[in-house]
Image (cartoon, rainbow, N blue to C red):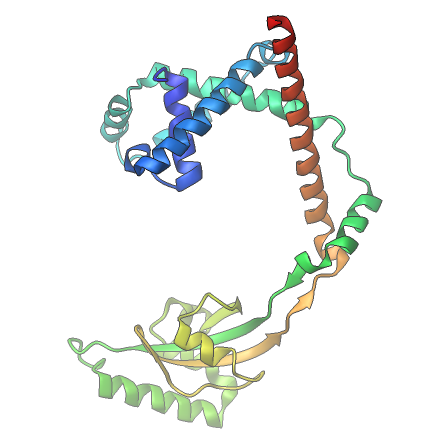
Length: 284
């Protein structure tokens, strides 16, 4: 399976299944890619024999955009050409493989497009039956100030940095409304330009030691000094947005898209199975 379309398919599957280049796959991963590629190649070959495929006209601009997207992954033309040569492709073969891939996608899109309209009633029923899927996790609107520790940089030695952050905290205890101003003046984090604003933060996005403190604060509270591998921090919790179920209006469009995608997939599978049955009937 070394013709251009097969090579290109294996490259795509390596990235999709394992987020790796083909040559970086372990033996078990490579076997998985080859198995999936063989099965998908058979389906693609079947699709390309249909009148639907023969009627596809690919806009040159779309083909060029796909080729340019691949080229833009490389730092230079030399790297691009060298990689193509390494995997056994040239520019013409790559174009052929991309056009084949785009033709299959166009056919499947056309097949899946019919009969995918989802009614408002279907959307609402899905929401009532799966409300647990649409819970919004707790978030907190946080601001923070960072003073780094660097023993090799004058003014950022540990004792000096600690004194600086302690001084900032004393000022903020007296005037909490000055947090954004103090962040702009003293914080060594890029968020300083926006008054230290981190935004609405869910669990799992901060360093563990910062998260533990941030999610223990009450609304409007200022933290003690917290140390992370970055340095010393102060955290201010502006707003607590508790966990809650999403309102129907908030998820209506998402549900509709999910059901439409699901329906397109079922139509495509049914159509491919019908092609297989036709092929078996002819062989018999």
